Length: 201
Image 1 (cartoon, rainbow, N blue to C red):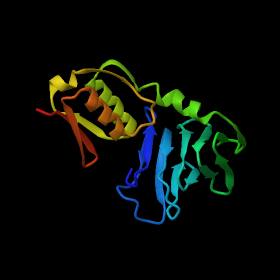
Image 2 (cartoon, rainbow, N blue to C red):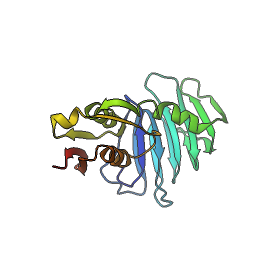
Image 3 (tube, one colour):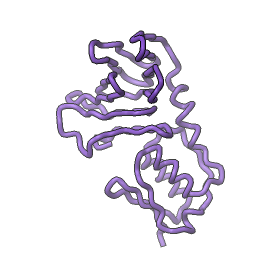
Image 4 (spheres, rainbow, N blue to C red):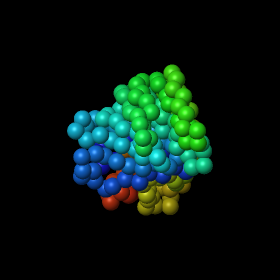
């Protein structure tokens, strides 16, 4: 993100955000599910819009489920404090290992204690265990997860097979660093919201 925050998108999810946060807040929109690790800035709250519900933080880590055509929006906090509200009122203020389930149809709220790390790990890990996967297939998955175009400059490099695994909450930069370390002849650059992976020679 422009402010250094990290967002991990579930497959099929989308976010809409500006190229730069210039106002008094940092605001984005989410459709689907995502894990957020937000850089602390007490003077510029980070706000996630999911339909009529918004989640506000100063700097923390949490998961939001807000899939289209599903009646519940679910927010689970792994670190820090989060405020969840609709158009009329504050629905809950959550801290670590607390979760709110807000029913959009009945406007009812259920808040309870959870193992938030497990909730996040259940989906963030599932696509990040690579057992002899090609670099091309890994790049396609990472592109969907982080919302960036990833280009591999060489067909032979694209077919390179890699064995590795990740926790699922690393940044794209960290994952690519490790992949390029595993495949020592490889490097990457980030330019204009694109990632270009190439051979060093």
